[in-house]
Amino acid sequence: MTENNQPNPDNRSDNVEKLQDMVQNTIENFEEAEDTLQFASNDEKEQIQAKNKRRAESIESMRSEIQDESADRQNNE
Image 1: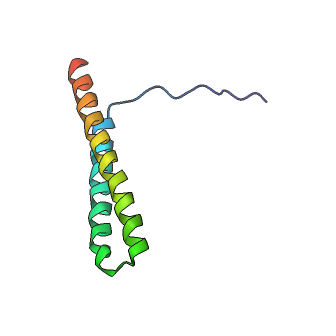
Image 2: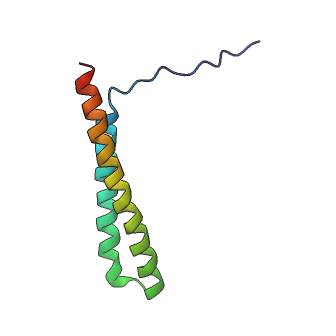
């Protein structure tokens, strides 16, 4: 029995929508974490703030990727 290990075709048709969902989810996580800061210990606050810094960087990267994907989509229509 042989396996056919061919990669799936590159389907980028819904990348913009997926990225927008990811941005929205990350923003929600960011806001929820900010809400918990008032109840956190000093160590927890530092961890939350560091994680939210990484989240902000991720949001910026995803938004840039959304622009790239959107431009690519328009060029291919």
